[in-house]
Image 1 (cartoon, rainbow, N blue to C red):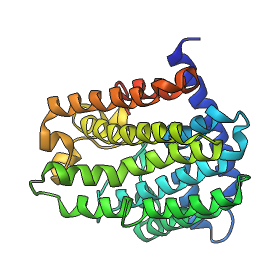
Image 2: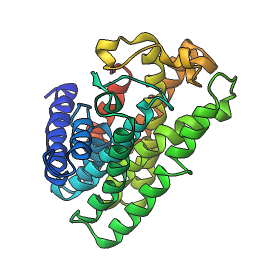
Image 3: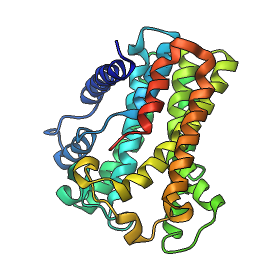
Length: 296
């Protein structure tokens, strides 16, 4: 089977596994209080490729074939990611009316309700990890590491500098800080969790973490470029907002050509990191290739 076809098929299968766990875990939308549960489920099931959970599951699968045990951890990462999207879209942050081709959570349910829905998904992500059937020591470490990457030393810290940098001229150090903390660290952690739970030897864990870090930064640079060159239909959200809002992005700091060059360089380095793993990392390699051509 062609590598790209296999990747597409595998992504769809793993997406379905994650969705099953999310559906089972989250309260039903008619459970009291209904509004918060409707908002949580609406945002979780509004679409998305589930890239982060896919990385967790695919990395785990390199070492263990019974992927079911890691799916709750992968789903927990998706819940935390969705929380960040809900909050990103709020008027006081990125002020986006659409996400994944559908109306943003706050547009449908209200700003306060969206804020709480995001909060609920955030705290629930830690709970879901504890319900997974992996070693207890892994659960404790995963909760701690996820909290760190989601906090002021990660996502929230990156978001804060992103807000403070709007309309300002920023340097390379600042843009790297924003992108690494807002996006790359969680993607890298997605790979790390799968590798650790799967039992990757230290040498391969390091290679996979390097792959995850490079992929994370590449993902955000690709997003920056898509905001300029993509279409609303492809992206499922508004385009051109980064420039309007004066956001600090790779293209705004380095230009489009240099950003594309950096994207290609990162993907090349990511693929080189896992090359020693050979065929067992073929799908991770295919995902890196896909990053160069993705439209959403």
